[in-house]
Amino acid sequence: MRFPDGFIWGAATAAYQIEGAAAEDGRGPSIWDTFSHTPGAVLRGDTGDVACDHYHRWPADLDLLTELGVGAYRFSVAWPRVVPGGAGPVNPAGLDFYDRLTDGLLERGITPMVTLYHWDLPQALQDRGGWANRDTAAHFADFAAVVHDRLGDRVPYWLTLNEPYCSAVVGHLEGRHAPGLRDERTTVTAVHHLLLAHGLAVAALRAGGVTGAVGITCNLTSVHPASDDPADLDAARQVDLHENRMYLDPLFRGAYPADAEAHYAHVTDFGFVRDGDLERIAAPLDFFGINYYERHHVRADGGGGWQRIPPAHPTVTGIGVHPEGLGEILDRVAKEYTPLPLVVTETGLALHDYPGPDGEIADDERIAFFDGHIRAAHAALERGVPLFGFFPWSFMDNFEWASGYGVRYGVYYVDYPTQRRIPKRSARWYAGVIKANGID
Image (cartoon, rainbow, N blue to C red; front, side, top):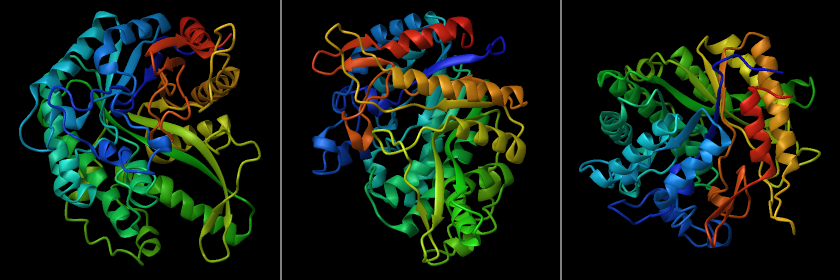
């Protein structure tokens, strides 16, 4: 089973999850610094203060990417490292780090893919309202322009935001992620301002003469009703609105879904949407990134809402493994929303990995997970989906947000006390997939 010549096999990380050096070289605090230091917010009080110490160990980490054989590396730029206050003075040392990282990748023949926002909003902006404040969107566009001015001559792929759903909903409604709020009105406002930030950043990149391709990454779910009962069908529609259509429709149709205002009428009248906003949000893109982790089965809860049906065989993070859901999402986006080239920017499996007595880290479940999802991606390609790349999550174990260091996603094991990186069995398997450009 081979992929087309030129198909991009990558690896992915995010700044706060691996960099560490949280207070070095002029970096300002982010909402994740604040949140992770809040008692009870993160498992066992873990923080990203040190994480994988990638800020100091990046040359050796890039050598591991060479060992793995990837064609591209998706990393994020920490906004508070570059503009510590979120707006205003730029920190040259922060830009210098990403300059060195970009050059280091190119020297090794690895294509950089830059994510401009992977959840680490500068705390100074949160103090002014964060994503509930419209000004944050404009400040993000300014930040995007600063990064592009330094790296734009060498970066062929730009992603504005990573998973606006998680930034808005998990951080502002569920309170499980930074900034740890639980307010539905603020959540819907944050959705809009995040999407507006994307649109303004696209405009800033275009105004700066960007030569690379510009896109955004959304985490999407495949939603299935428990039955054909109208109540269950309506529950699935609500979940699809909440998790998928609130992002896809503005990005590709220039409007919020027709049922959005009624669904959220109890908290907002969408008065935060101003003339021209949706045109900016729907600015033409060059590609679209998809993160896929979950396929949901849902039923009516008896009160006009929904319930997710627990999976029969949950992973350690409580979700099911459904590779077919990735194919369903790829098909849907390609058929219903956009003919743009698509890329799987994340999919992965959390495990409690450990070295055995022989030193081997036998994460065979992860190999089976990636095997199934790569096969689903290949089947989508054969159905005509314009897929051009696959980036497993993640390159190495890292600070996994509210789970701290309690679960591991990497194909490289990180021994945190020593910062030693050890290839898991999945790393050797994935290196073979890359070398063969497919699965034998």
